[in-house]
Every structure is written in C-alpha cells, then in structure tokens.
Amino acid sequence: MRENELHYFEEILLARREQIIKNLNGVEEEIMQLRECELNDEGDYACASNDNLVENAIGTQQSQELLEIETALGKIKSKQYGICDMCEDDIGFARLKVKPHARYCIVCRPIAEKNKVH
Image (cartoon, rainbow, N blue to C red; front, side):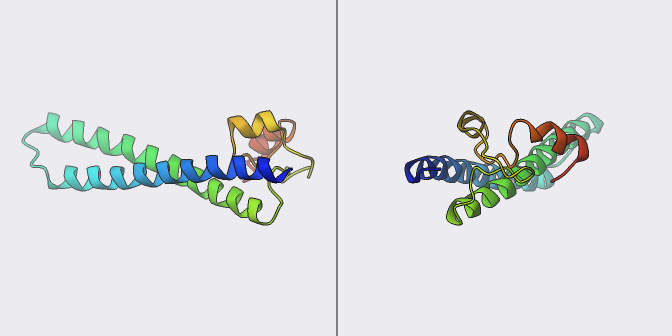
C-alpha cells in the first residue's frame, strides 16, 4: 500500500478512535447518573434497567471496535496494514474504505466469521 493511502486510513482510524473514546466516556457517565437517580417505582426501575442494558451492549461493541482500530493502527506503523490475517493477500481498497479496521479480505471474512477466528 502506498504511503498516501496509509496516511488516509490512519486519519480515518484516528478520528474513529477519538469518537469511540468520547462515546464510551459518555456511556460511563450516563451509567453513573442512572445509579445516582432515585427510582420511585417498578416502571422507573425497568426503564433504567433497559437503558443500562442497551448502553452496556453498545459499550461492549464499541470497546471491541476500539481494539480492532488499535490493531489496525499498529499494522500501519509496521507497514502490514491492508493484508488479510488469514490468506495474507491484500484487502481491497473498497473494503478498507467501508471498514478501515478490517482484518480479513472479502473472501476470508465469511470463513473467519463462520469459524469465529478473532
């Protein structure tokens, strides 16, 4: 991959990492606020509990994405970015534009998902 392409994806990944960190900090703050709220009845408790479950699920997904972004940034530094973890062929530019932290090419992705290779 050319240097300008690496720089392009690095900027995208850094911006996404910053956004995820802000999101995760916001989720933590909202969870703390929910814990401090006085819940007056079962309806309030159910609503707060449901909100907490949704926020935890989002937080878990975004934490995983953050790990994948950190891995991708490390690969940029080592000049290994854009290479499939499974077959070691290039990951297509179009795929990386859609998912800049992709670890697998379009051919290996369904195999990895089926075998749950992470």
